[in-house]
Image (cartoon, rainbow, N blue to C red; front, side, top):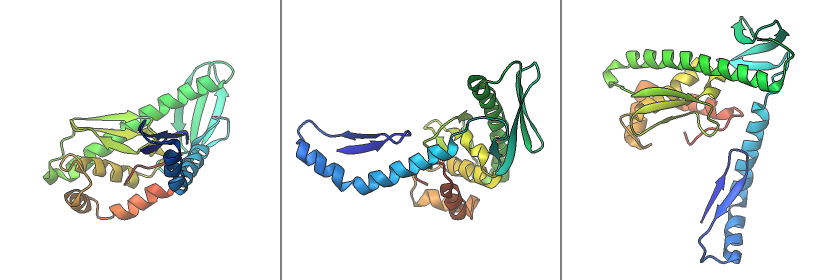
Length: 215
């Protein structure tokens, strides 16, 4: 029997056909506290991350607040100008256009910043011989980062909201998985050697409204 909680806080219970309704209900009730705890966390996360993309809205980049300013200029583009995110539109603003422009900015910044930090960390820890096969950027909600079996690292664009030290921590976490695929003693010994303050960074990353994986 298993219980799965979706990113929208939906709850799915899977039980074998041989299990009676009474036994299934007993199982669900036994996990009620766990279900409430995690669905509440996800609901809070979703509420905190939901943005309307309206003029004057506050967004975060690398831990610092930026103000979104929307103006009709005759062209569609979006860029960072000091402490401001400037979104210019060809015609009247609409949410679909706003989301498309904002997504393009996020993807571009994530690719640039994550690539730069990955290169810097590989160079800094040359003796560890970290050799990822690639770097991908996705709009993942369920986790901050992952490392595939073929050594490709994937990071969530949500990391853009966090300070550089937290981005580095997630990258180092995934780089260590190139040598240790699980979270055993060897993995944490290696992580400790390249990121001595990983426990503090881990707690900080988990303390935000965004959902984290088991780290």
